[in-house]
Length: 277
Ligand code: DGL
Image 1 (tube, rainbow, N blue to C red):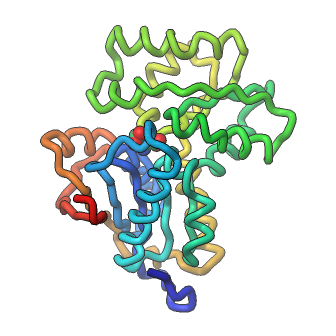
Image 2 (image 1 turned 120 degrees about the horizontal axis):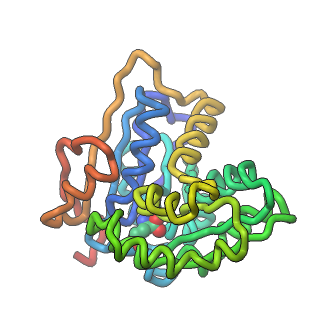
């Protein structure tokens, strides 16, 4: 399905998709920065996680997610999932005409702005780290930065379980990230939807000496800039909201979702987006 670009208008919603409900951290940033906008959120909870799957599979899922949002007449698609951005963003941009933004470039730009010693750490899922897109995006802004990237897959289940301040959490953080202290990184890019919820524990581990970059805020900023440039920002007199679609309603989706969103989720609809289920 394609969008007729000449017909895009400010009153259409912004589409956001993620592999699950972690992308609600991006919705939270968007709602804060652009309170007049309507948001359509798709979380592909039935096929979560994306971060341990092959790039080819993630690309197929990302296309189906994008199609779903375009069918709901969105004016822009935000790929809130770092794994999907890593594997699929250039393909989506080539295949669809409407503005599509991911979480990697905004986060990379912010990290380069923040680093004083030009040593940036990046953490993410195996799919995100093996794709190397964060590294490429950072080096495109400043080729003299040293990027140290590491996949930290256990952080996702810890956050889903709500274990953000347990002894085991601090132990796993130390296990994964002690080398970043030795490498003297002064900025750490949180390259996964789930990691902002670990920010207090990470901050404690680095004794408040490392700047943590949450791509959600930066992505919302980019969405604002793109919409403004295209004259697609909704009038400030409108009070925005969010419609939630999930491909599976697991028993605890609401508890976890509200943790990411920071407020009650309201109505949530279950949808099928693939012929496989
Ligand atoms: N949303 C994914 C990401 O940001 C994390 C969860 C998953 O692996 O699907 O990479």
